[in-house]
Amino acid sequence: MARGTGIRVLTGIFAVGLTFCGAATPAGAAEKLRVLIIDGQNNHTWKNMTPPMKADLERSGRFDVTVATTPPAKSPKEAWDSFHPDFSKYDVVLSNYNGEAWPKRVQKALEEYVAGGGGLAIIHAANNAFEGWPEYNKMIGLGWRKPSFGDRLTIDDAGRVVRTPKGEGPGSGHGPTHPFTIKVRKPDHPITKGMPAEWLHAKDELYHGQRGPAENMEILATAYSDKEHKGTETNEPMIWVIPYGKGRVFTTVMGHVMGDDDVAIECPGFRTVLLRGTEWAATGDVTIPIPDDFPKSGK
Ligand code: ZN
Image (cartoon, rainbow, N blue to C red; front, side, top):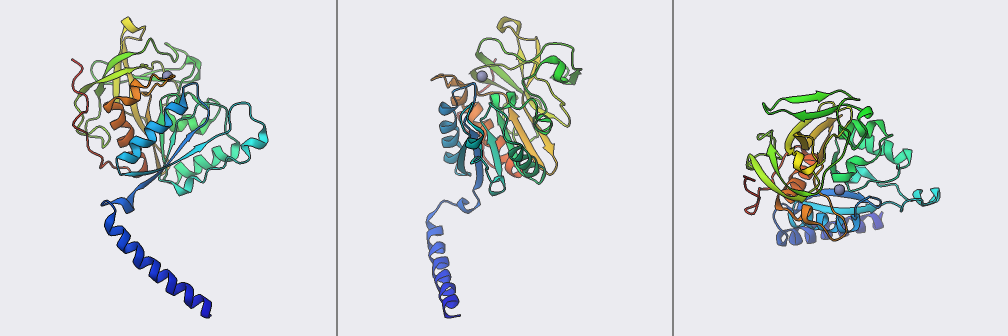
C-alpha cells in the first residue's frame, strides 16, 4: 500500500516536470504523427533514400520517424523471425521496400492495421513489390506488373479516366530519366490543394503502364509520357490515393534513387508530396504548407 502511494507521488512529480518541459518545446510537438519507414531490400539504393526522407519528415516538425529494416535478401527463415513491426504504434507506415515477400503474419498485420484506420505511404519502387499479395495489390491499386496482371488507368486530354483492360496495351516500364511536368488533376484534394496546376519535377523516372485491380483509385496528378523519352504518349498517374477499410493509402511513383543520384527526391516538389501525402495517409487531412521554393510551371 505504502509503495503504491509512493509511485503515485512520483508520477505526480514527473507529470509536473513534463508540463514545464512541454512549455519549452515547439507548438504542436505533442501531436506529432508517428511514422514507421520500412526498408531493407530494394532494387534502388535504399540506404541513400531513407535518411533524407526521414530528415525531411522530421524537419517539418510534424512527424516522429522510426525505421524498421528487414533482413537482407536470401536470409534464412530464422532471420525473419525477428521482423515483427508493431504497426499499431504508428499513425502511418511508409514503404521504401521492394524485395522478398514478408512473412504471412506481417502481411496480415499490415492488412489489419490499414483496414483498422492506419495510413500507408508507397514511394516509387515500393509499388513494384509483392505481386503475389492480393490485399497489397488492392491497397496500392496499380503496381509494376505485366499487362496480363490487371487493368491500367490513364487520363485523356479531356481529363477523363481511361481504363485499359488487362492484356491490352503496354505493361510497366519507363524511359530514360528526365525532368517532366506534373499536372494536378484534383486541385481540391488536401495533398494537392494550393499546388500550381502544373509544375516541373526534377529528373526522375516517369513510370508508365502500371497494372492492378485499380479499384477506388483517385488520381491526384499525372505526367505526360512522351515519345521522345520512350513513353506511352498519354497521361500516366504519378500520385494517387485509395481507401482501404477505415484506412488510407497514398502512392507516388516519383522518387528514383540510384547510387548517389538522388536528384528526384531532392526536388522540393517531391519533398512536398512526400510530406503532405504521408500526413494525409496518417490523418486524412493536411496542415503542412506548400513551401516558397515549390516548383513553378514546367512551361
Ligand atoms: Zn527507379
